[in-house]
Length: 392
Image 1 (spheres, rainbow, N blue to C red):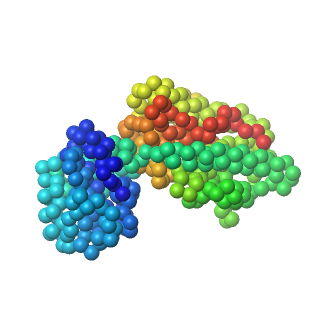
Image 2 (tube, rainbow, N blue to C red):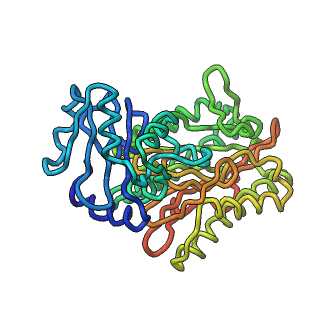
Image 3 (cartoon, rainbow, N blue to C red):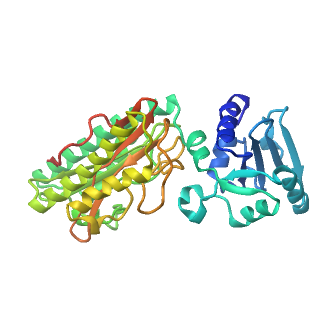
C-alpha cells in the first residue's frame, strides 16, 4: 500500500509538475492504476477516491460499509466515510475544489491505456470545482516502473523463453525432415509443456503460425484451426511467459524450413532492420542521457519498413509497455501509429520492440525483443537476440 516512504518522491513529482495533487479513483476494479498504487487487501465494490496532495497527508474517501480493505491505511492519514451520493459529492467538493488534479485520463483518448476514468466521474470532479489533467507522467514513474526484483525475474524468464523458442524451431525442422511433420497446435502444446517444466506461466498462447497464418498478427492455432508445418514453410513463434509474481518476457522468433525465396528474405530483412533501427535510437539517445519518447521510436522503426516498400502491410505499433504487473502495461508504448504516445522513456520502464509485416494470404513476419531503461541507458533482452532468419 501507499506508505510514508513512497509518499516523499511522489509528492515531489506532483509539486514539480505544478499540480495540487493526484486524485485516484476506482469502482469495482475498473482502474488498474488505483489497484496497483493502493494495494488494498480486498476489492472495494463502491466508489473510492484518494487524494494525494503536493504536501501534507493523503485523504481517502471510502464507503461506510467497506472499511475492511482500508485496515492498513496509515492512522495519521485522513479517511472519510460516505453512504449516500450527496455525502460523497459534498466531501469530494471539499477535497478538490479550486485545485488542479491529475487523474487517469487521456485527452481525446490519445492513449487508451491511460484513459481509465469514466466520463461521468470526470464531470463530477469538474463540477466539484477542480481542473482535471492527465496523470500520464505520474503513472509512468510510480506505477509502471520495474523494481530490481522485477528486472531479475524478467532477465531469467527472457533467457529461458529464448531457449525454448530456438528448440521449438529445431523440433519443427527435424519433424518435417523425418516425414512426420508437426502441426502448429502440437508445437504450441509442446512449448506450453516446456513453460511448465521451467516453472514459467502464461495467460494464453503462444502463437505458432506458418507463413499465411502468420499474416494474421493475432492468429492462434487450435484443434479446430490448425496447419501442418512442412518443409519450405516460414514459421513464426510468438511466446511470452513469466515467473510467479515476475515480469513477462515476450519474444517473437522467425525461421524458414529450408532456404527461403528472395521475397521472404526481403521481408525478413526489412523487419529485422526496423527492429535494429529502434534499438539504435534507444541506445544513441538514452545511453547519452537524452530524452526520447515512445512515439519517436515508433516513427523511426516504421520508416525503415516504408522505405523498403512494405509500408502498406504494417498493421500495428512497434511495441507495447510491459509494466511490473501486466504484459500490455500502462507505461509508455512504442507507438505513434495506433495511439499518440508522447511520454518519455524514463529509467525503470520496460517495453517490447516488435515491428511486423503482414501480407494477407502470403506471409507474416515479426521480430520481437524486449527492453528496459536504466539510469545509464537501455538493456535489450534476450541478450543474444535473433540476427538472421533461422534456417532449420
